[in-house]
Length: 355
Image 1 (tube, helix red, strand yellow):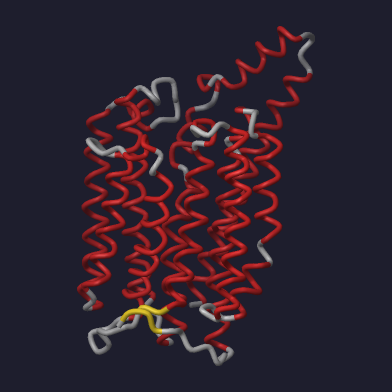
Image 2: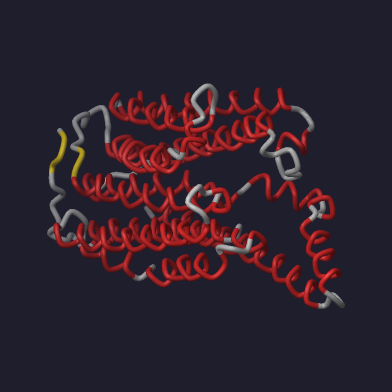
């Protein structure tokens, strides 16, 4: 588990560096605007700074990669593996990294196919960091996306076969289906306002529970129980993941930006209220409750940033990166709490939910 914790810390560092780069870029734009001589020059400068054609190709490629967003692959897997470690005391580094690579491939499919279908609808017509616009080929991007999906699913299947756990591959299949109907025709349920519920289910109960089963099962132990501990952790993971998605499209929310900021506030309040309710029910170890509660300043930062900047399209895009911070740190706190409970031999007995 030391390997996975080191990976979490490394990934969190990458997240922070990327967020800082984006914030510094926006601050430079902000200062340049205030140096404009008059209101007309101010508006012209704003347009110039926001014009993606003035941004270097390397920067556009960096934005297209969306590296911080890949925390949604790392966190469910690591939380699931930590829950399995608490339950069984086992950890397979080889299986963990196969699952991590497979998850990254599937998230890449989600990103690439989303770019393709947004290109088809015209939503990304002027988005220069769109992968389709960067490579100049819709068909090539789509073929690459589905090739990555196939490779990723092969890796998930291999891990399920090695673990001898068919329940896990069924849950992961459900997670992939959620991703497909979220963005792919003829469903495209994201346009119906169902993106967040699908995201919650895919990365929370489906993926986190499946990874728990895969990292805790062996051919000698095929009947690993699904406990209240892993289900509780999966709900928390699903909630923080959905918050990233909501803030990624904040300027497009049908509620309007002011009501959207209220939704973000209530979502963060729900996250920590649910955390303490779970703590009272003893579904999670006290170490998880304590460490996750320590991330509340990041939650407060998300709320305050959205409340202050929800009307500013030039700044609100940074909200998703603050949500990524919350997601990564909250996930790391869950992992650390679960591992600590095992190491300290806490008298925490996970409650059986499904056998």
